[in-house]
Amino acid sequence: MRVYCKVCGQRGRITKTNKLSDDVSDLYCQCTDAECGHSWVACLSFTHTLSPSAKTANQLVLSLMGSLTPEGRQMVLEGLGAQ
Image 1 (cartoon, rainbow, N blue to C red):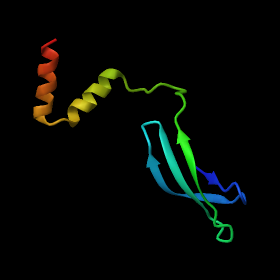
Image 2 (image 1 turned 180 degrees about the vertical axis):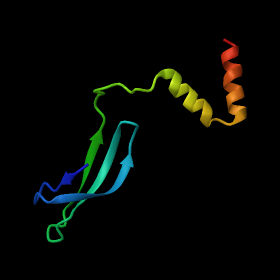
Image 3 (image 1 turned 90 degrees about the vertical axis):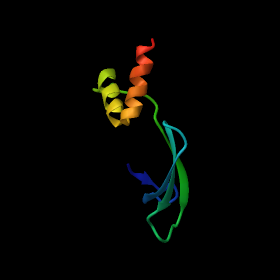
Image 4 (image 1 turned 120 degrees about the vertical axis):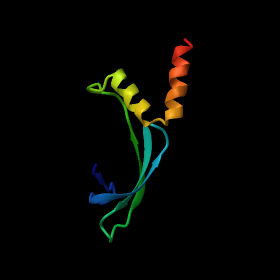
């Protein structure tokens, strides 16, 4: 991702990212022109999906189950069996 200084038009550098939520982050930026020295905060946000993920719900569940401890997997299986 590229950012540009709105004062002088030079490319900027993202120096820090502050994640506010799953969909919104503040980007702390700095102009690469030493004579300008402008710094600013830009907001990056997710708006909508153009193409859905190729991962199916089943693939996502299997991936999540694989990352659990054996005890965690057992808890999930017991919870599903209770329904």
